[in-house]
Length: 304
Length: 282
Image (tube, rainbow over all chains, first blue to last red; front, side):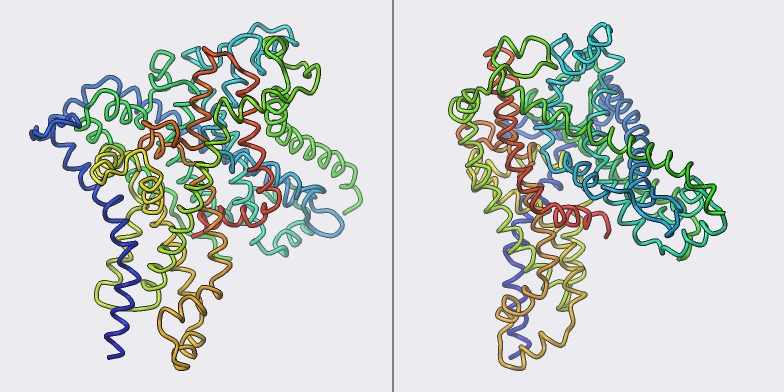
């Protein structure tokens, strides 16, 4: 009786979340794999299976390769730059006081800095995109070009110069993301016992030495987590690029990315089958990236 | 050995402050600029971008609120996020609790079933999701959007809260059961209050995530501008502004979206940072 009641309770508590999740999350994912094998256009009732045709076409699609190239650039630079800046700033914030008289301490005002740094993280990416549109405007009216004009430099087409556009986008991602990783790394640094630094400082280690010999090795796991997060962000970029430069990958394919290409194919060109095949490709890319990162960065751990 | 290090330390401290201040300014200045640009008129907008507005004009804020429908978008967003987060927390906590504290045939499997949702990029589901929602007749409706928000917030919420419920002591729940409380009562009156810190973190996480959501409303309520949420509205004003050229109203609209977030952030910044950080420290 009691057992039965427990089962009833379990079932009652699980029913709604289970159904919602199955209907709106799992079933679309499963359908996506299925649809990727068809040439479905989104409205016709006839669905014809074309086998792996979509994937073969994908491999010959110039847009797909351009998107992959852009994701590759983002995958390398976004984590590297963001983590480097975030590590630098969080080190200054937490241990920047240096090995002074009373051991190691944070800098004055570090709380204020942390609050400011983190703020872009709570802004919607779409809002950030609109904000940076005004900053990147190609004429002297743009904020950045206004600054350049003061220095007597000609206006730069931040978002319309093919060789520059992707970098401008990545810069915004870094701008928004750094604060989160500062907080993340700060938490990691706070977990390192203070005696380590004090002992090293007594032995005469300077700040640089403290950073590279103590902080960095002990922060390895946290940095790895950050790296995966940023990598996944580099495989997305939808909202920012869509708002900042638009749907077409302007200028000249320089900002073509998979998520926007998927969106266009599914909702503008009526190529739902092809879009799903791209989604499947993106899924395998994401999983491969995560597994590779975990594999290659897993080494002997430093025991605390 | 400490003494000679002093002067060098002072210089380094100064440099540290310079580096930190530069990054802080990089973040503050664009926001301040947007805020100031909302007081400009069109002539000033197309003048020197580094000039301050001539006077404190508030008319653009009115235009943004009414004509650009920021008021409506704000209202829609509040409604959707309120019900979306409330539903996520209720159903997420229920599922997480059951999966964390009861072992029954398939409990592990169902847990992994929920958590598996974390591995898939949402773009994979995008096309089929649109058709699923259409099948239920829920396109261009807030109900549909709320249900989808809940569904997509569940994996992380269940994952996080299950871990949290597992850390809570057994004894209190057992005592409540011995006193004759039902499972449901034990959950709502004993376990939920005990899990408060975890619930607060993940609530903040979900509120922010749903407030900032752009892709899902873009796909699911695109057809009816009266149903749009803030992010959608802002993005569309910015594309329109090119033609209608009411730039001050665009910046006022941006300021109107940023300000409430800023106020909430300043009040709750500690919880927000730990709430978002919690995601990474699994």
